Length: 117
Image 1 (cartoon, rainbow, N blue to C red):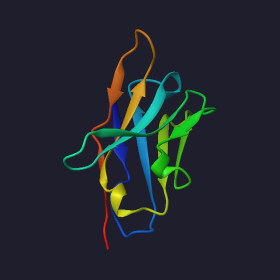
Image 2: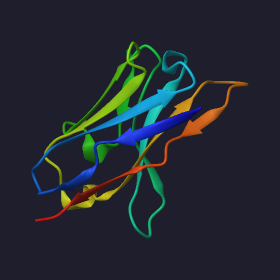
Image 3: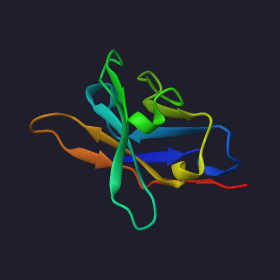
């Protein structure tokens, strides 16, 4: 059972990246999904989250209008499309699966996003 993030990398300010979070060993459609990030020396912060069906999505204020979370339950994958990237978006990005009361919480290993010119 694991979550695997991918898609990180080095991008210039104003650029775009799409992160993927694939689930293995469990069915993603039963889980509320979140993206977090952690910059060096900082705590982990919630970037955004999406409900099991995708009907409800919330974002950190600083990424609203730039980042989009989506999910493809058929592919057991959640995505984070990041546009108009800024220096402050540099961080390790993690996805989290939360199944609700009595169900486990899973974290991925993270994927690094670096915004630099």
